[in-house]
Length: 324
Ligand code: AVJ
Image 1 (cartoon, rainbow, N blue to C red):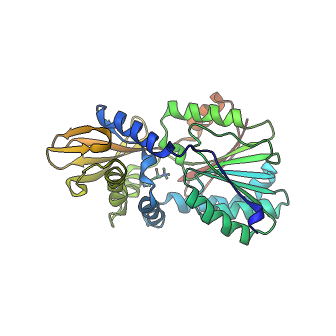
Image 2: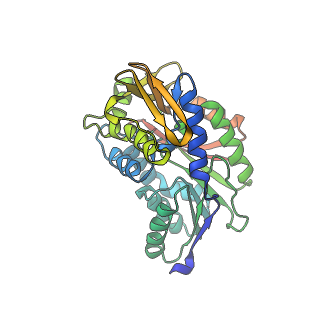
Image 3: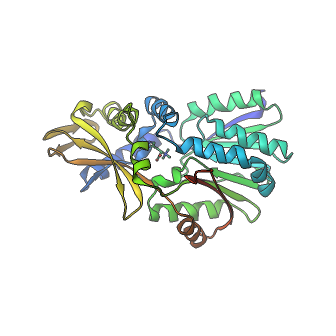
């Protein structure tokens, strides 16, 4: 079976640390202080995120799954994909729904999971090879933010899937850059499958990012443990409080870690000392929420035509198909 699994490692060995160092240097010396949500996902962070997706307050994953299961056959028929490329794939159940539908339609030959972590890709990819004996799995280790070269070797048409509302982590300027990159990678018959969380009442949004069990708080603080380990920093996790705010102007959830006291943190690997005031906020994530007209318009401005749009029954989440 291993002959149908290939791993294309496109990242230089120092990619992770170089990116982390640059981002932490910039973000912790900026006012207000920020960190990229990219650094949440070490082994512990990925495990905590998996637990978040099962929380009653965190409707996103279930809503997207409902749309996928309800419309997988239509998606397969509309795209006719022979290759499915999935960004930030992980090991999710969602992938299998898409694979089943595309194999059922008789078009799919190759699955290209793209992730920054090779461990996640190898484990998930090998399991898929066993489950889907007819499928080629061409796992690609890369950072889609700066390198999304699809292989000309991938049978066309291809579908690029970017699910889970990961798009929401990017501000409007970053999303424009992403669309430009997608456009460059895709050819006329290819398609883009996007998952996007929709604007809704704050009373639903806030608990999704501040759950009763405190798993999201733990997930948020885990980024400090990543910095402690990777950059020899000395953050005291107990000296920071998680909070989530709805920014009504920008229509996005913002996650923060708030310093409980005046404190000094050393990030030894960067020769950086950061002073936090009492109640000073460190912003760790943006989670933008979308409306159909706005998202359609920004995709159009980016060179994509939205051809299909589905939501779950409660209209909390959208899945859309777009064409370059
Ligand atoms: C994986 C980016 C979609 O924004 O909802 C979950 C991450 N952060 N709880 C999101 C997350 C806090 C999640 N995304």
